[in-house]
Length: 269
Image (cartoon, rainbow, N blue to C red; front, side, top):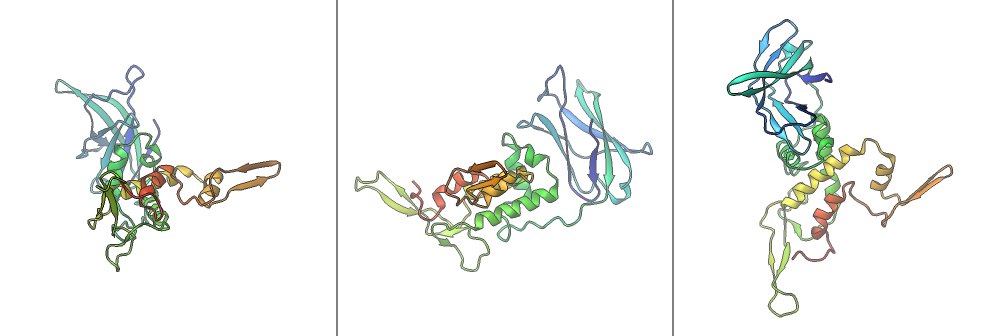
């Protein structure tokens, strides 16, 4: 198996895809019970993995209090185990190197530079298919992606107005109206749906934009499209992108989620 790096003083998430007869059994009660360090000492991790159904693998989150500065430089063996009738079997062993804590991770502050916390984003992607671009990313890149996604959302002009004039971000908003009743029958009316809260669609759009940003991996085409470039030529190669050149999102899912909230869009129904 590949060597994993654990960072001292940080929350670490590791993954394991077990293979039994060529398939990953989602129903086996796996657990990581012991970490054996290079000097032979045993450390018990107070955590149990959860099944990551979208990626068919186990995910184990190790608290920041489990990997300490005193462990830096050690090589650990993580014993992935499973139990059957109270008997514990070692299914596989993974090597992990303990390194110094990653510094410079930006702080996520809801209502200042993000609409969701890192924990909320983790929950969102744990329930989403094809989330490996997020789950495989390190914490610093996840935080940066969420902040950049917020910047992308903030470039848009939304219906209504800021709920409080002094708020930093554009959401929550007031004067968001939806139509109730059949239009054109005389029985329809508009009502305010804002309520001073951030719509779940906005939070989901931020997450979708974040994973799209992580998945770009420096792709020239994606970067050009995100910047609104409609065509380019390199030597004998040329390409024209579809659309109007006003693309504001990397993620089409994010754009779809926010479509009804954009100024000038069809009213929410």
